[in-house]
Amino acid sequence: MKFEALLLDLDGTILRPDQTISDDVAKAISSIRERIPVCILTGRELAEVLHYASVLGLKTPQSCDAGSTIVSASSHKVLWAVSLSTHEVNLILNELKTSRLEFFATRPDGVNTNINSDSYEKKSNWINSDWDDAKKYEFTRISALNLSARDASELEDRMSCFSNIHVAQAFLPYNGLWAVDFTHDNVNKGTAATKIAEFLGQDLGSFVAVGDSYNDKPMLDCVGFSVAMGNAPDSMTASADYIAPTVEEDGLAVVINEVVIPELS
Image (cartoon, rainbow, N blue to C red; front, side, top):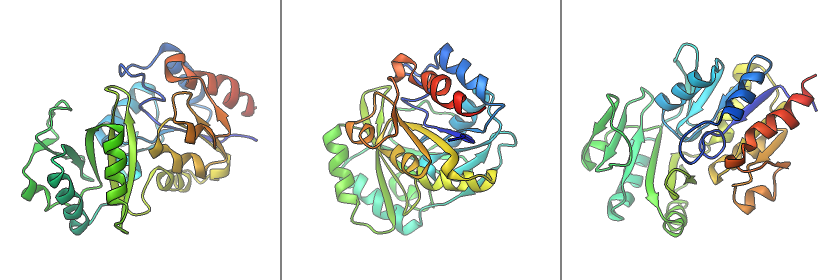
């Protein structure tokens, strides 16, 4: 199989738990980025995907907010975004308020809203809000933060009954806890992968995708060759085409050097 693009999760795939990129991973990405498109698909916010795309020298479309936004790494222009309706936002925030969960939410303009969360460094694009004010916006993504594995699973189960909302768990390797991401129904990393393929004019069947958490599964399921990191849950490694070493073992560098590059010639 000749590979035509590489789709990468960020946390637990590119980034180590200490939020650094190893020299071997940076070097591997540098060796391939001029040969095929390299695209990050992350649950993180717009500013962060643009930051890491710049650090890694990537110029192609990138995706943030759990698949709900695609942005040009070169122009910083949002190419595509899908938001939750205010009705869906109200359903989600009512549950989070009742459960007394901290959260943050993102908008297509890159402005972020949070309720009493000290989990993230506040920057110029952050707004501290109250519950009633937050319900007025059509967010692209809402994330409940810093949950135990059990609480994350229970929240996902409770919210999965709403037909217009996509719910996915994501492991937070930098603190060992979990987040639960809410996006519009049928909007996930697989949706973003499909849209990126359209922007690039390429076939998803020729793409490689690498990820480590449950929110990566739609992306891995829709490409021609799927790679689960060694630190991924068993349910993901069981269905992957290839299992890489862990992120601490520079598994992404191994994938690029031993799996992807040999299929480019």
